[in-house]
Length: 304
Image (tube, rainbow, N blue to C red):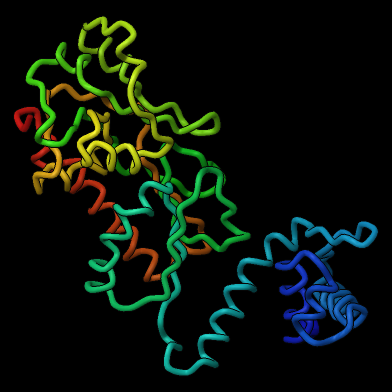
């Protein structure tokens, strides 16, 4: 019979892998670094797999170690929650979304998920792509575009951008928008290409001249939307973000023309998470929330 690794040995591996150091793991576990090294060596012998490359004083996970770490970390977190007593059966959920979505759109809606599906220990992260799924134990990632071919990924919705402004700042013809203050969104050199005002005017068959380059600029969709709500200009806003503000009257669509985004929003869920009930419930809820926003009547062709 093959000997199973001891709990102490597995703790030593998990702590060393998470912290990147035998010394840091030893401090966390209140033992010597030599003891951590011996515990891990014993685990490797019992499993018949090398878990670390030892390079001078550094340790680097092997492929076997990378595969083992997230499941082991999750197991120790579950054990910890049982030890805390009252929260023993609260499911844990790590959600990663673009920063603009975390800073308002999703954070404002999460109470609805909790109300309908029960309490959970939720970690909401606003991340740019790419995200470290296994290192951060991410269960659900919503991203603009299909970035993660190594994990199951599905397209859930395709959005568009709409000219929006505060009700007091309005024009009724596309050609008149060039005379208003424009708000630009630039996701930066590492982000995807966001439709520019020049793209929008070209699609409308209008030559705006230098007006398409003037105005305010923000590096996040949420910030650009807030500038528009504040009355500082006209922004090109994604429907998923601006639908609610249009519905409640904080924003107005001065013209009807929209411009479809080049890529869809995609949902990525690692296989290790897909079988969990709380992840499956959140997936269904999030897809419905996204589709409800982009299909808002306020975004229809006759709503301007």
